[in-house]
Image 1 (cartoon, one colour):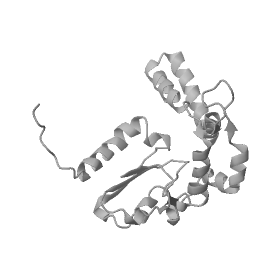
Image 2: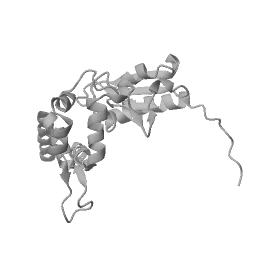
Image 3: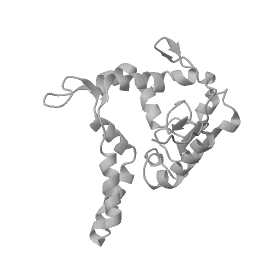
Image 4: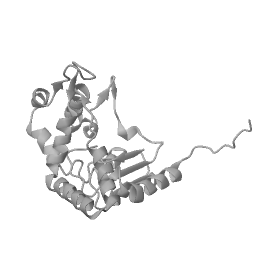
Length: 217
């Protein structure tokens, strides 16, 4: 089981995202960031948290970084540095592709994860059954955080180790990726060079699936 850059316990090292959620009521989010998909668009009439709002929020958290990135992109074009320019294009093609979220999902996340902390408090109930991390026994646990993550700060994902008390210490591991932000642990050169190799090694080490020989056709 691998948890990456997620707010298992959003009370730890609260970020500006956490502060925003707790400075406003649940009703505020319901009334101010939920919109109806207009006519002539797929999903017409559905309530959503629009992708353009989510994207604007991402950019607003680090405007200087994005401004610098686009200036460097312009300079690379002037110099004819096609390789760096193409890396910029690939990154922002993906970064800018933000989907609308169903209102039910978004609002449930606001309430359960960021306002009531139900997983960390062990008060989360799904379909009449309590979610009990302390009952997890037969798997290994790997948590991964970005050193510079300004969405889920250090400790929020690592909290899973404190909740999963029945997993033996030898089957637990945590990795903080140096100089990586939230997006960097999932994509780009830090994912390829730092995160994926350790994740692959962890899975192979703890994979207890019996190996069987291929049966001839």
